[in-house]
Picture 1 (cartoon, rainbow, N blue to C red):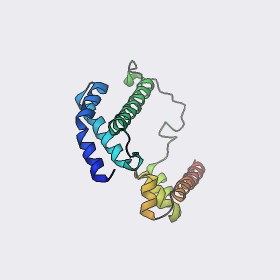
Picture 2: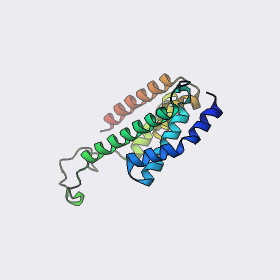
Picture 3: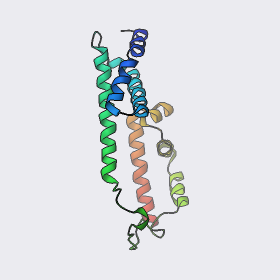
Picture 4: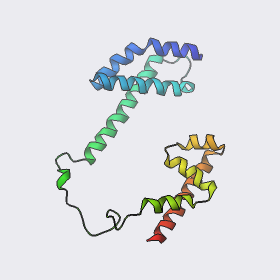
Length: 167
């Protein structure tokens, strides 16, 4: 199936996707988000579609998997956050450590430590901190993704050691 035919099939199936998304989410806004996520995932993975396979089934499977992943993520968040706890009256330990001002690092110390990293590990690490994905960093710096991961790993190790010594 060529790209044009794939996109035509994608447009033709939008009504079916909407009905299925509404059935799963029971919310119009969540259904719209699910349709958008499904369409984007299908466009990203057009190369994984097998010729002469059931296109509608393939799309519905993508949608269902995204729905399950999102639902599982929300369930984990709900289990971690106890809504019965009054956040304003949570007892706080006063024993010191990293959660207190005395035990935390000054932001200038952290930035200074990052800036002291050698350039070949500082640049990928700074990009990673700025929100770039490994693949984006690799593409931007024109280096293999494995090199990006190892440089970020080494930067973390150097920073851990340097910040530990500042204590």
